[in-house]
Length: 99
Image (cartoon, rainbow, N blue to C red):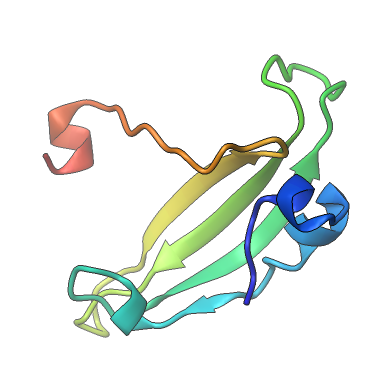
């Protein structure tokens, strides 16, 4: 199974990030009704990359597939730090995050 905590599993960050590309997430693994999800790309962004003030991270682009196959996918981006502690914080504007 793919995971993202390279230091915990003794993996190099580029290998762990690359392993997430084309990952398919089953609809049963998502707590809300969906058609599942997929990862379209996973790119390691180095700490010294231009305009990066956040340290090294894996930039993931993906889509959540709706239950209605005629509806468009819900696109998302997640940036996972290479030294991630496994915790997450979600913030946003209520109208933009469906809260």
